[in-house]
Image (tube, rainbow, N blue to C red; front, side):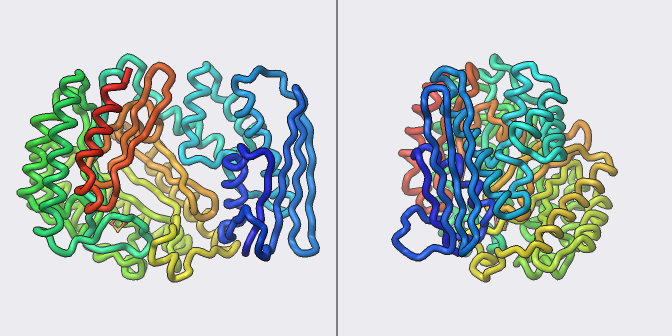
Length: 494
Ligand code: SF4
């Protein structure tokens, strides 16, 4: 389907585009009406001092839907633009829902990746939880259960957030190893499949050491301490025990101190694990590993291109326990083709038998570039959307019943059923890094392939970002420039 989308003024684009995309996830949205279109959506907003009026229409074949609204804005220039965008989003949501005859987004006009940030802002202003829920429901148009969930997650995170003074002193580190032993069919990750350890990893690790040396030295000189470290990917456990040891030598030399309270390694794919590797991680001080089954149904694991079965997951968790690793996270995904509530229930039961401290429930987001998208598996029927919703709800109910609390949450583009990804934790086992990274109240220095850095100003929690390329060749080629840019950003922190 092709949708022609026109709007005035220009700054409304961000505010409106994502809502239309959520309403019509498989449509191509064009802003140039030179070719044929199946549908036309037009929005026109006019400002006259305190009065703002907005008109909108949707034409689809012979069917047309129209709306108009006026509102008064008694405010100065500060915040006026944001308020207008918010009202325009509410207007757009109503227009789309009127045309479709059904809800578009369970998170109302919130379309961003980090909805919990808004709750922390409200809490900073001293708002009470029940007032926040009411505001989310009525002003932001969230469904009540989502409003409650966001407030609950923010409440669980809150004790882990840093005050401005601590945020001037403590940073966290992400190190990206952008290699995997094979490509899972649902994944659009633009790292690399590891074919030849020597020729591919040796230059990558040399570049990574260079970046770690330079940035580690600067962090110490600037007086920062590292609170948490996260080795992600890709799959960092593709590294040999020797290379992992060398990497940790550098971490202990430049980054780890008595202030470092958490070190996570993504050991995502069980086919990269063995008892010796897990014993080594524990000896190196790793206190959290992620062993990610995604599903505990063997037919699904085969279908999504994971090179392991359920037994392999169980064995890996047993090895990690025997090695003495304190915290295990397990990632699950709801929405794989062929999986319904029955398969989700089976996965939940098998996961609970392993007693992981953390469980992260993702909703399948089939992104462009993944094999599943190429195979045309991204289209959802209404029944399928309902099944995904039931799956997410089932996991939430079963894990809550078993004592897990939702402690961080984010959303992604192309998610099925307008849902969310939620991290659950047993009490006392919350992953600090996940919270800091999601709520953006601490500077995160991202190193290696795909490392994303967030430089946070604790004065007003504003931030700027830098991204290392995920592609290892491009990372190796550009590492000097990446170091220079990061140095400048770190030096500029207040
Ligand atoms: S292991 Fe993770 S990053 Fe690697 S291909 Fe599979 S889903 Fe993608």
